[in-house]
Image 1 (spheres, rainbow, N blue to C red):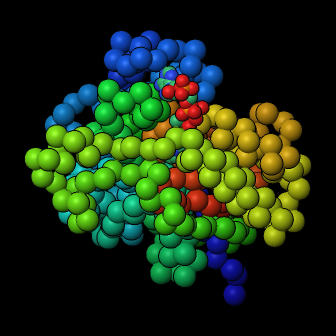
Image 2 (tube, rainbow, N blue to C red; image 1 turned 60 degrees about the horizontal axis):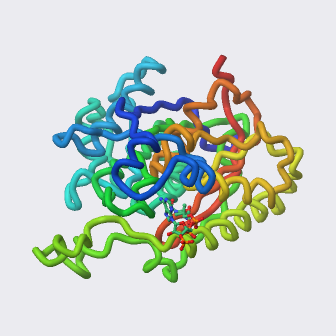
Length: 333
Ligand code: UT7
């Protein structure tokens, strides 16, 4: 029997129109374009300004982008995973709403929460279902309205995050393309370094938690940075080693976009000398949490060729991190 692998067969995306530039941030907090650019690589991020719209709005648009491109009947979709740190509501899966809104009436769906690694974990989950033979079309959508949890008086976080959504369709492949291997890890030691303190079962919402601004995302940037650099690089090197991939064999690095310096450090440890292999779009969107990886796929899709070797990498709150080795399954030109 032919082995079934799980391949990405289409990508879609949506980012809001509004651009929050470094210049505008200078009017909100004590910062400047030079500091933000040199420390993070970010020039601007997109913000979903409409208060009546949540993460699902962007997730639906990204999913519809794929349906349109592939001329797919939404009834063919078996499953929808919405990777997100900012679901529309804490109870009622955003994925269920997305499925209904796009007409995927034969699908089931749920949200996957692993901070910035949600999309990577979602890829692994989708691949497992596809490889089992149980489902044939799975949409993994990474979407976050980070502006809903960012304190725009906190210069250590507001300069980093942005809103956006990206999606990938996973289907069975019989040519050996698609997901080849993964190295995923988590460690609760990181829980206090990157978190939203209140609003969960441990510390439910009260007037006091609102007054203390405990519903905003907070991070100890330096510590997160340190762990991100070593863990993400270790994961990539591990995946390369156990699959006998040299730096020459890797065609592309598709990394979570949290900080350009973290991406460069990871690429350096992997021995990637050709800068064109290191895919970066952080300057346009900032850190969109679950959406960074599919937004990179979307922006650079036209450069990928069938059979290309892609190494994915992510690191986020929890801590959660990992690397995936995937062979691209189609030519998009
Ligand atoms: O996606 C989830 C995972 N998240 C991450 O991976 C984020 C990881 N961390 C980072 O990317 C970086 O730590 C930051 C971009 C958040 C901060 O960069 P840094 O190089 O680690 O800066 P720092 O926190 O060490 O601060 C250096 C200086 C400090 O001033 P002093 O103490 O040296 O006088 C800060 O107060 O820069 C100051 N600073 C700022 N200055 C201008 C901090 N934020 C700002 C700012 N503008 N926005």
